[in-house]
Image 1 (cartoon, rainbow, N blue to C red):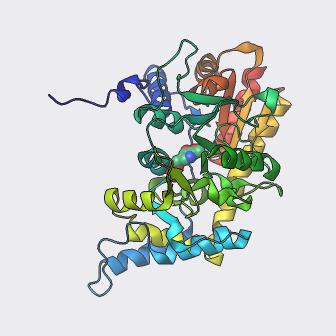
Image 2 (cartoon, rainbow, N blue to C red; image 1 turned 60 degrees about the vertical axis):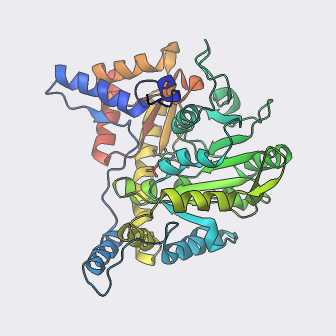
Image 3 (cartoon, helix red, strand yellow; image 1 turned 60 degrees about the horizontal axis):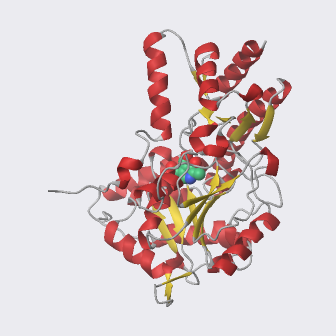
Length: 410
Ligand SMILES: Cc1ncc(COP(=O)(O)O)c(C=O)c1O
C-alpha cells in the first residue's frame, strides 16, 4: 500500500491564484459579455525584449546545426551566463562572487520551494506576513509547519506581521527562527527595506545561526538610492544568506523560465552534532542530481539582457510597469484610499476602508466594478483588510480600471 505525503492534505485545496481564477471563471459564466479588467495577477503583459528574441533565434539555429548542436548543458548553468550575472548584477555593486556560487534555475518559484530539501525538517521557519504564499506552502509540504491553529496560522511557523502600524517593515522575531524568508521589494506590500533595516536581519542571523532566504524577484524595480539591490551589499550577508533572483518580472521571462540562486561558500549549516557543513556543496549535490540544466536557448536569451541594447530594452519595460503602478497609486490616493508601495515595486497595497474583509472586497470589485485585484488575506493573516493591485497590465487596462474605480467610488 503506497503511503502519501500527508502534509499535502494540510494545504488549502487551491493555490491562491488558482482560487482567484476559479472565481473569475464563475463570474464569466454568469456575465459572458462583461469585460473584466485584471490588475490582480502577477504576470507581465509586454512581449520579450527584441535582443532576447534575437539571441534565442540564433541559439535555435545553433541547436539545429550538427556543428553547434548542444545536448545536456552544465546542471548549474552555462559559464557565459554566470559570468554576466557576476559582472553586471554583483561586481557592479561592489560584490565579488565565484562562478560556482551561482546556480542557474528555471524560475525562482522552483528554487524557493526546492531549497527546503537541503535543510533539516525540524528547522523553525519564519515568514514575514503578508508575503508570497509559496514560502508557507513549501513549509507545509516539507513537514515543517506543524498544525493549523484556531487563529488560522501554522503552529511551527513564526509569522512576522508587517502592517501599517510598523510601516510594513518587519520587526525581529522574539522567538528564535532557523530559516527566514525575506522578500524585498516585497510582494504584496510593494515596500522595500533600506540598508539599515536589512542590516538588522543580517546581524540577527549571524547571532542566531539563522539562514536568510532572500527573494529578490523585484530587485530591478528599485528606484530609490538607499535600497540595496542585493542582500550581499550588506557586510556579513554571505555568511547567512541565499539570494534568489528571476528574469520573470525583469525581462518578461514568465513563460520562458530562467532564474538564478546564489549560495555563497561562506554559508554554513550544522549537523545534529554541531559540525559545520558548507551549504553550497549540498545545493550543488541537489542540483546535479535533480536538475539537468535550464535550456541553452533560454540561457542565451537571459545573457542578452546584459548587452547594452538589452539593458535599455529591459529598462523601458520596467519603466512602463512602474508608470502603471504610479497611475494606480495616484488615482487611488485621489480617491481617498490609504495606499502603500508602487515606488520601488510594481505592487500597490491598499487598506480597505470600513473594515471590509479582503475576499468580500474582491467580490465587490469584481461584480460591481468588473475589476480584478488580489485579496490581502491570500498572502497571510496580516493581509486581511488589505488588497493588492499590480502595474503589470497594459496601460489601457490600467487606465480603464482606474476610470472604473472612480465611477464605482461615486
Ligand atoms: C516574490 C516572488 N518570488 C518568486 C516568484 C516566482 O517567479 P518565477 O518563478 O516566475 O521566477 C514570484 C512570482 O510572482 C514572486 O512574486
